[in-house]
Image 1 (cartoon, rainbow over the protein chains, first blue to last red):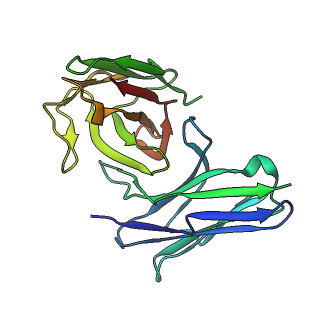
Image 2 (image 1 turned 60 degrees about the horizontal axis):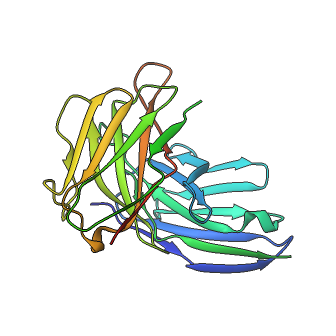
Length: 113
Length: 120
């Protein structure tokens, strides 16, 4: 089955700096890669996603890049703000009838004011 | 749109009792829902895939007789933790997959707010 590795497990940055979180996946058939933000005790919220036919996608301060050959994808947050502090999860899935998401281990991002 | 609710948001029960958790898609139909379990400071672990009108598909290591799943309608799936024990204490989250514009399943999954189960 699919295996998703996520690094780093914790990340501390100064407000205004950029943050980068990286994930690798094992199944070359995976074609959908969402990123979720989860605040303590809350539900995961989809913040951005990318499909395998695209190499990069951007939404304001958030961008995701995908390297299908290397089987890795990354989340980039620019001009970080304290409210960006949360746990971020990457995931991978194959959009077939199952479409199960396999999650990475999570990254706890702390943005220091 | 694409709102998923869960009930209850938290529950405390005694060891040996059963607890039912409901997951509802409020403004869309979901033929497929997913149940996850999350321990503190850990990732989401898929427990089972719930399909409307058919039996759930359980992940390896998840006891289907202990975690009963019923997906009786296009907007409701239930997870019943039977004969709960303290080690079942966890955060249980469901998600639902949205049908796309063409009437087929889309990529996105939307999560419920979770249910915190504490077994004493």
